[in-house]
Image (cartoon, rainbow over all chains, first blue to last red; front, side):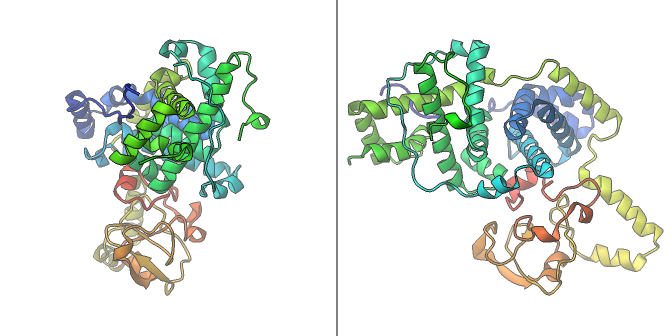
Length: 220
Length: 205
């Protein structure tokens, strides 16, 4: 295994003075610059809300609310955390609150604080071809990936989304979701392995001819 | 050191995060060289992380950015900017206090420490003599044994009324029954602790 193995946290460019300047300006009252500040992260804000709410209209609404809340609290932002992390955490809080208000999945929310016993065993050991990055240009591929992610239980999906899509580190993920670091690691492992199995079987079977991932089609 | 396939699967996520110690990492590297199945698991897991970590995976609805920009502009015009959530209820509350002419009340409020988490719900009908615990550098009081107590080595026990007087707010987990939207400041939810606060404290939900 000569290839690099390590996932590196995705820090924003060191000394991003442009962003720091923008933050300072907005904090001093130039609020019209706020959109410029959040624009690089607007996709991530939306994705975070969507991963939790799983409804596009709700996600957009919450994303807007979260951004407005960040604007309202911009003076409380301190440079010890990354602006993007702060923004994503506000979004996650807003989305979780929205979901609680809906009270549609109360039973699951209790269960979600327990990690499953036992270990997840990979099911598919076929050779993995590297999926070329260009594949993501195809809407069908993105759709399949989104379906696979959507088929995960909420507790796995949220941890995976924050760590591997939003690039929060393990501790930030734990703080955002109010769970322990150990739980984050357990859930992240399961999420990655489950997604791997889902994608492996889909890829082997022709991917596009593979039926959509549904409740009755989960391999675990 | 030799590792089994089961150990490799258990540690593969940590391996990718570079959170395995050197002997384990070396053993896993050896294992991957000889075990085709585990090499497949590693390659696949890495593929998953790479694919989902790609920005192109995040699609936003058409016009999302434009609508967001408009919403922000409206927020700026509407005076939400720089006007933190707690201010929106703190000012009316202060005005009410002044209108009531309650100088004594005002004095008693100013003599108390400020609420440690201004966005959190203060709770209602909490029995004043109920024993609760607080810990250093946190903002929340808990029932003893709550899983969400931080800095457990600094825990001290007191009455709920004392904790409230010191500015602590009730834990949204173990004291949830004392929290409700009706008891919170206008527009503020129990879990509406900002990420900034969550980062510093972690007591929030």
